[in-house]
View 1 (cartoon, rainbow, N blue to C red):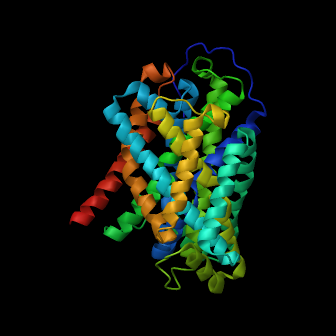
View 2: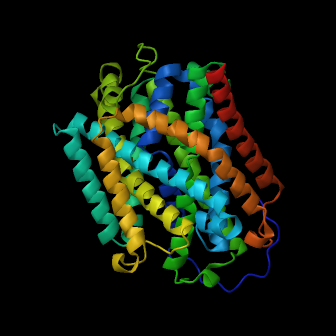
View 3: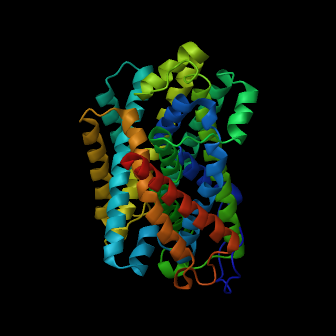
Length: 430
């Protein structure tokens, strides 16, 4: 992906930690994209449609890369988070519905993911799910409020390793190589509501709105960590910085996509052939693997949900805080002390409390995870449309507007998300 020639950039200090530090940031975003919501959606897809659904992973990869890269570039070059840019460039009648949708999506996702953590950990520890949810939420909130941004970044990178459990679980499933190759390379499309709903859910959860807002704001947080505390100091990016961002995003999204693939593989090779095509809870998905692939697969599946859940929930609660304060034209950063950013940290606490409260209503965690992915599928297209417009606006990115390849991939992705959602609505009506 190549951008147009840049204006002469300001002098920039080198990134502390070099390329390893930046790749770590990409892995965090990729891991957050494979949150318990995504795990629930992909496990349901594998159980329902088997190895014939593997083709969705390579199809989604270029779309995941381009949209996260656009979000990263917007945050890095403009110097503000995604909704702060929308506020600067669009009227309030556009801004407020987008912020409301993203905020609500973050709350629902955080609640569903806390429920996923509780159900998965309950499989390994005989403690009531509500107790696990409350303790996990309290621990996550304490880490966000009392810990530093540098500490959160280090912890997130280690938690991302939990997702490799799904590679091991897929290996334990011993899938037929010929069927795996056929399912990966030969798309098998069905025109019915169940199939299209799952396609939209996979698109929605792999291209979730919280990933964009997190990525753009993570770029801003990294700039602040380098001493660029003002918007003016953060504006612009050198060629080297944008190359590092592209490399960061490609590695992170490739990591995310590989995990997506192996979740589909582990459940498609075991649950679907055994007739377990409907998954109603995280515990049921993990437990169903035990007689088919051994107790190791069950434990690995559950640990993957728990590990990445502790990474994803703070991404979502913090993302909701970013959305709200930027939508209102206020400031807020993980580099700020709580007493200096009361609205920002208060929102994190309120969203965490709301997520715990929603779990008290007794909804099915896995079903909520799948439906939250479908909801994301409806919120993604308009946000992608705005991102494409902003990333082609010289008033936002100067001469860093999109090149032809990025534009082609970006508009194709936007069109695909609109088409998938439209097809789903048509099947419901028809």
